Amino acid sequence: MRAPVAVLGIFVADLAFRAPRLPLMGETILGQGFKDGPGGKGSNQAIAAARAGGDARMITRIGRDTFGDMAQKAWAADGIDTSAVAIDEHLPTGAAFIFVSTETGNNAIIVESGAAAKLSPADVVAAESVIRGSKVLITQFEQPVETAIAGLSLARRHGVITILNPAPALPVDDAIYALCDYVTPNETEAATLTGLKVETEAEALAAAKEFVRRGAKNALITLGEKGALLHGEAGTHRVPAFKVEKVVETTGAGDAFNGGFAVALAEGQSPVDAIRFGCATAGLSVQKPGTAPSMPTRTEIEAMLRAG
Image (cartoon, rainbow, N blue to C red; front, side, top):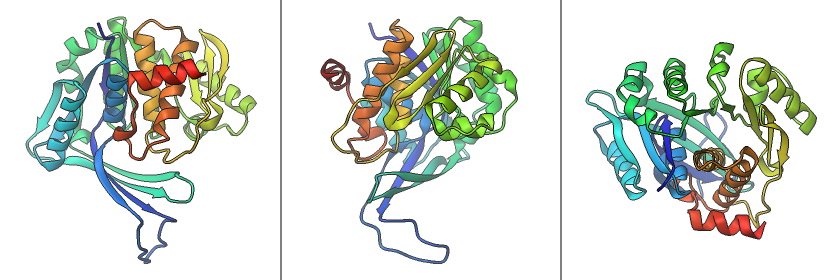
């Protein structure tokens, strides 16, 4: 039986452009590739969780339009439960502009949430049975913060493990961290949220301690090619990343990590083993182009774990 993971977040259609650099204001440059496909942090994490072996359940809002059809098709392909997906008859499904550097594989993104911007605490209440029946709930900040708080609160009430991936980094009241079993920012997000510089492992640990001081049970700071750092009730651990042959695109790597990490926790793996599972999931994702399309399968993840 697959471990149930609920994901509260948004779907957007990713419109990805590849070029050597971003244009200057008023400038037009020629691209070197274009691709559209399913995206949005919540949807990406749900797809990552489903492919990693979890029973993923999506909680969101989409429009009744072409991009909404793209969402439904993507979720159906990976067997994601959409019983808590609301269809908005008035607002369009969201979209994201993604610039991908052909030189480095790094990215820059603009997100318009569309119908998911109206994802509300009432939608969370409507999804209570989905959350109650899950082992883990993961949410982010692409939908309204009050909705994320409602989801974390409801999950905590039902004894569900809570993960907050605070992206994009937004100013929030510290009270939200008391609802988090794990808060999982990357280095940039950790620096923005704590006001501390996060460029070294020691600085990452200081930021993690600050999240715990603010109320989180555990802070898990993802460090890209350096792995991840955990601090809190589960102890202090630095877990290295897996070596990869070539980074093709980093878009979605954080979502891959969080989706994999959530599944491993839902299966009862230890926090450190769950981080290794998440690192393997992310390490595989950066070797393929795209966001949701780059999410690896359970077979691929287990092969990377065995290879060490």
